[in-house]
Image (cartoon, rainbow, N blue to C red; front, side):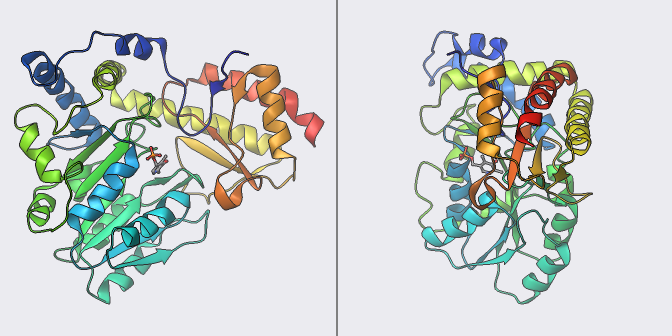
Length: 359
Ligand SMILES: *Cc1c(COP(=O)(O)O)cnc(C)c1O
């Protein structure tokens, strides 16, 4: 059985160009060739990340940096903004790191309300806020700029934002709106194999880290800063993934960010159209819908696992049957990465062909 083409919301389908890039010979990471590779990726990454700050490279999945942000920055208390599997989990991770933490809990499928964030921060005692920009489990896109504006009203409160499933698919003006830590794993919106994360740390977040105890070593932001000055990483990075990243950043620059954003809007709209034409509803509310994936509400009450299995067996495409407590009540279709209106058409035709047997 050939492996199915992935339309799950991460990891996503990898291009042959990326696989080829990963076969470049391994080089030592404490040498000129590596420094050249590292430095060459920076300008493109900075454009994608909307920043003039360095973009650090962590050989870990996103959770490494998500946990690292907590360990580097939280001295008093963190406010975790929760509205789905990943953002909810971040609250749990804060506690596991031994930090004082509180959360705002939105219902799964709903976005975070900036007014509630303001009200909570006014209670005082917080020094860090975490937000998941695009909640991959529910297909909700949170109002990042509005929340950043609220957090800015409070001195000494740092904003940490997970953009794992939105990075490079829509504009993220990190410096302009004042995000203190922006992070993304590369296996979702960036369409690379898993194992690497990129992140940006503001000057004031680095200053905070300097006085935070128990930062550990592997995710110590100050180590990343120190090594970045030599175009390097604290520990041996996944060099093959850096080659993949170099190739992907070059191809994103070649396509152009505006065009890439537009392509995601178009392919996303195509999925929404299919959803409506087939009598399903969108799980996320209007105005807060992800551009990179669609969480479809299973209002027709189909047998989701059987549907997905049939699509896979007959067309070799894989979509996802819902995450965590909304498994089966939703299913998810990704349009992240390299997908085009043509490749999405292939998938949607396959779904249309199989669906009648399940309704
Ligand atoms: C997938 C995902 C994560 C977790 O990423 P890992 O690579 O498993 O560490 C975190 N946040 C969001 C929004 C995600 O989609």
